[in-house]
Length: 256
Image (tube, rainbow, N blue to C red; front, top):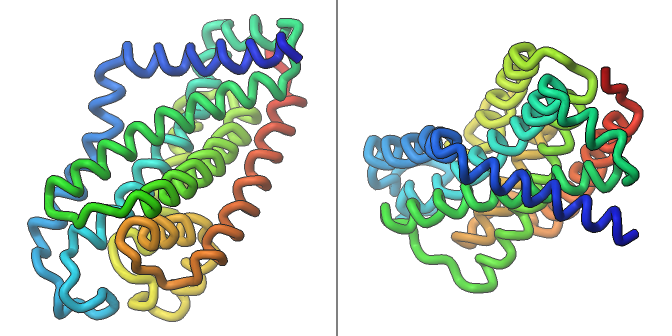
C-alpha cells in the first residue's frame, strides 16, 4: 500500500518536472488556445445580435469556457504520447517490472496529466478575464475545477487506451488529431449547439466534451444549455468508463 502510494507520487512528480523543464512544451500547449481566444474575441466583438447567445453577453465570456475545454482536451489526449515516449527509451519497461501495481502507475500518470492540464486551463482562464470576461464567483470557480478534473481524467484515459495498443508515436499523433478536432468543433465550444443543423446537433449530443464545456459555462458565467446535474452525471459516467478502459488496456499491455 505504502509502496504503491509512493509510486503514484513519484510518477506524478516526474510528470511535473518534465513539464516545467520543457519550456517549449509549456508555451506550445497554451499558444494555440490563447490565439483562438484572442483573435476570435477581437474578430467577433460584441455579440448581442448573435443567435443562441444571451443578449448583452460579451463573446469573450461565452468563448473562454470553450477554449478551456479545448486546452483540457488537447493536453489530456496527448498525455498518452508520454507513454509511447517512455516505451521508446526503455523507461516504461523499468517501471512495469517494479514491485508496484500497474494501477498505481496509471494513477500516477493520470494525476500528473490532470495537474498539468488544469495549470494550462488556469492560464487560459486568467487570459480570458484579462480580455474582458466577467470574474467568476468563488463557488463557480470551485465547481469549474471539478469539471476540469473530470474532462482531463476522461481524455487522459482515452489517450492511455490508444497508447497502450500502439507503438508508433507518429501514428498516435495522427489518430489523436483525427479524433480531437471533431470532438472540439462539435462540443459547442465556439458557438451554441442549438445553432447546428439537426444531424450535426445529434452528433454534438453524443459528444462527451459537449457536456464538459456546458458545465464549465454554467460554473464560470452562469449559462448552460443543459441542466448542470445532467452535465456532471454524464461526464462522470464517461470519465469512469474511459479511465476503466485505459487502465485495463494498460494493465494487459506488454512491454518489449
